[in-house]
Amino acid sequence: MITEIVTFRIPGDMDRDRVVALFEESAAIWRQHPKLHRKNYLYDPEAGIAGGVYTWDSIADAKEAHGAAFMARVAESFGSTPTFQYFETPVVVDNHSS
Image 1 (spheres, one colour):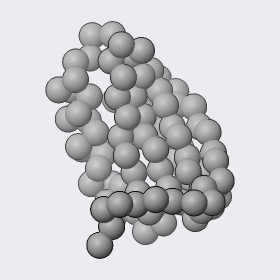
Image 2 (tube, rainbow, N blue to C red):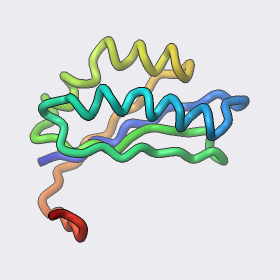
Image 3 (tube, one colour):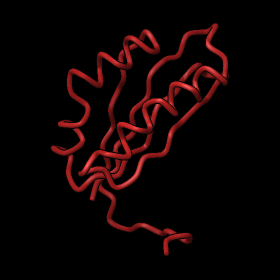
């Protein structure tokens, strides 16, 4: 399993309500993605950064999901280009799984 961290700049005039609304719009896409295990959205207004933390079976799955369509959505919604980091995830603690 791998964890992918995706971050991108947000416009200085974009408030929290707008960022969250855009996140909620994109959540529908991710809920239906068959290879995604989990996504957590990230927001740091002081740094002007947003993004997500994703859990996948492989880096290939992550890269497939974050192709041209994803890059275009980020550019259109936030006016920026995301950066990607990948980490092996050998141990997971989930205190709330059923």
